Amino acid sequence: MRNGILLITSLVIFQTNCLSQSEAEFKSQHRNISQFQSTLGKKSLIGKDYDIIYHRLSLNIDPRQRQMSGCVTSYLKPLTSNFNKIYFDLSDSLAVDSVLFHGVNTAFNHINSSLEIRLNSTIPLGQLDSISVYYSGDPTGNPSRSYERESGRANSATPIIWTLSQPYGAMEWWPCKQSLYDKIDSLDMEITIPKGNKAAGIGVLVSVKEKTDSTQTYCWKHRYPITTYLVATAVTNYDSFSDWVTFKNGDSLEILNYIFPENRIYMEEAVKKTIPIMQLFDSLIGTYPFIEEKYGHAEFLRGGGMEHQTMSFMGSWNFGLIAHELAHQWFGNQVTCGSWSDLWLNEGFATYFTLIAREALQDSITWRSVQLGSQERALRETDKSVFVTDTFDVSRLFSSHLTYNKGAQLLRMIHWQIGDSLFYKGLRNYLSAPELNNSFARTSDLKFHLESTSRKDLSEFFNDWFYGTGNPHYTINWSQTGKNIDIRVKQTTNGDVDFFEMPIQLRLRNTVKQKDIILNPSSSNFNQSFVVDFAVDSIDFDPNLWVLATNEVIHTDDVNKEVLIFPNPAQEYLTLSSFGYPFSSYRIANVAGQIIAEGRFTNDQKIFKTIDISGITNGLYLIEFKGPDTSVTARFVKK
Image (cartoon, rainbow, N blue to C red):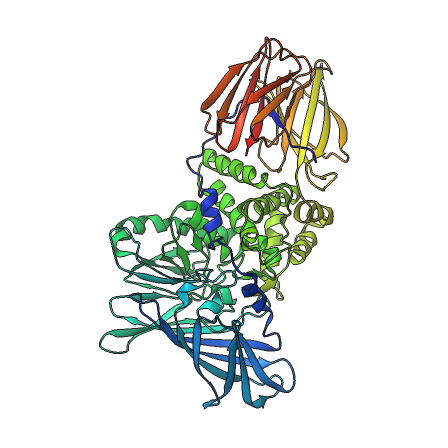
């Protein structure tokens, strides 16, 4: 395995104060990445012999206590003959009180988080029928934290109950078919709560009914298909307000916000960022998928967020998180990954569309800083692919390096290769395809629609970047004679891919002029010449940050004047091999441009010069080497 090396010819100053989330927040964005028992995931294979049509969740929730109770009525159609047993996923921490079929108690067996219901008559193939499960218990002790009770709000001791079921947690608070192959066609949620609270929910709030002198029932109606893990509620003493977004065709949509009352003044301004982001996404990829209902936010006590269908749960309110969760309404909710192996179809898209929103709506410095941060994360785990082989490894599923950031950079490279128009057209075709819209997709489905639109074969690209590991490193050697620029490109890799076929952009420049050129290397060693009408003093690799790669650019007046740094990423020491060129000093800067270390080389360090980096924290850095008449700058990763 070769280590990637990055050398560039000028010191770049990066701004990092606008990054939307830290790595820790990425890891907690949708799940608690604590160890999750794989047996929970294995239960998701039940229920392939029936089609879920409708659920009505009638729940009793009091934030002051952990116990909850409810009745879930499910309408279904058998997909096999002689259908006389129904299986639901349901945690053993919940006790089933009774099961009614045609108004009569029917036998059941509840063990190992599986609820087997033995019907007292057979339902014919394809006939709609229903069954009601009454249950109660304390779901808060489950390992995935899919149903949480907390009271840690700032300036308030008021407790909150909230749910977050992705990937395997829905069964921990209601009986369901936990799958990625059968969406619920429609849903009602009737949530009875103590007065003084509000219950956030999916879809449209139909009514708030008086239940008793001390309780009321929030009735939510959702008439779009929804996968099980996106069903959610949150209950506390919410305040609420609405914004409205208007689209180019004149349609408008309510953005309903449930927020903690102590945060009302701040939130009224913070959530307005949603409006231009939604208008942008609407213009690029099509109408908001749930336009007949609403979009909304519900505040909860988690550092990141969760894209519950029509109402994202939010732990913070920065631009990046708002954009990320909103993008999921198209990528993850309208079209859902058909296997957790393809989770990047949810998370990679949401991460990339956050970058797209920043590029369109924020300043270029902010966008460049966030894009560099995403590339730096995506370069960290070179021994694993974006494709997930162990779908019960929840930490791997929600890897910020691979599923989120490398997935996003994979999309950016496709965007670069096929161009704006065809990229967005391909995505619109993907989202609106009858077999995918409001259903499930695999990576092969996305590939098909991008290929059909662009007329470009992406097989090698997906084999390299999605199924393969590692990334390319480019060594660019160049020289100029008169108006002729000779460029030699050498590609090495640090994973299991021998050669990444990828166009690259170079910017030839001096203090007055510049020219961008595109090369299409066809092999690991590639040469090409160009004619320019000015004296080039430097070349920038990939100035628009399209390609996920490390690089070094070397001006070779003499073919023996070569520079190499290794290993990269490095842990304790970094070694410079200058092949005798007399670099005398170095300085290291962080991505904000601050010099954090510098030093000089001794006379005995002629060929290999070793630099101690043990005292700096993990991250991406720039190191500049200086000699009598030249300097070279490199990027390296400390891990």
